[in-house]
Amino acid sequence: MKEAQILETLVTLQKIDSDILNVDAQKIELQEKIKAFKDRIASNAAEFTSKKTRLDDSRKKRAQIEMEIKSKQTEIKNKEGQSDAIKTNAAFKALQGEIDSIKKAITACEDNIIKLMEEEESVAAWVKAQESDMKDEEAKINSGIKAVESELASKDGIIAGYRKSRDEAVANVDKVWYERYERIRKRKGLALAPINEDATGAGMCGGCKFTIRPQSIIELKKHLAIMTCENCARIWYIEEKKEEKK
Image 1 (cartoon, rainbow, N blue to C red):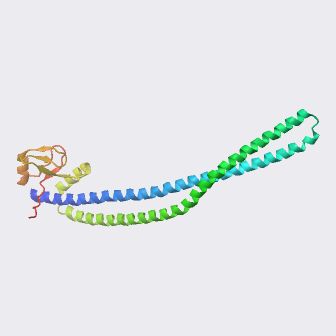
Image 2: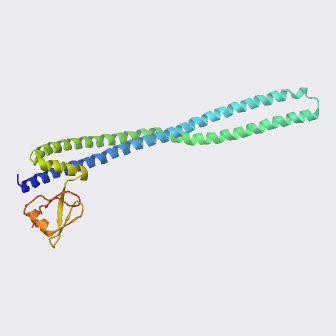
Image 3: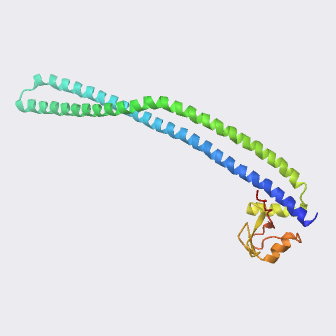
């Protein structure tokens, strides 16, 4: 197989590999989109759970305070029942002071209950509204996930087609150069690099920007040999210029 044919088959192969890489990149974007959708569902659920837990904790705390109030009210009744047995004014004043102190504690508990109830009212309203809204949003997100998963599946089909074309292309490539192509591709991502030629006849490697002598470009155009970059080891080729439409 002549150098020109070898290079042509390698360029064809790289075109297919580039197409596969592009679709793989598209798949990664779609997978990230699915992850973002699922993260949003998880975030919404976490926020809802946090508010619901906060509401439940507040209700439990309020129930405990209400029990504490009942206990203190019972304590007041018991102390008031002791007043008939008290013989001195000093003892009566001391008992009355204890009762007043308990009443103040009850008032403080009642103030806490009011604060908790106000907070519960706000959180409960949010939880009730969010419960419905979250289901609607989750349904929309899941619909979006299904659409992206469908698109992802189509990309798998496209890649399968490219891989079949690749197998056919590999069958036409010189074995020695194919092995070299694969070694470079695994290190560099792409094994071939186009020559970017300037007006002076000099050029630049399209892979690493290494400067190329005009003589090398002339030899490459004449297909005298297959050349590789001294810097990045990629195989050079000249891109065919498309004719401008008149």
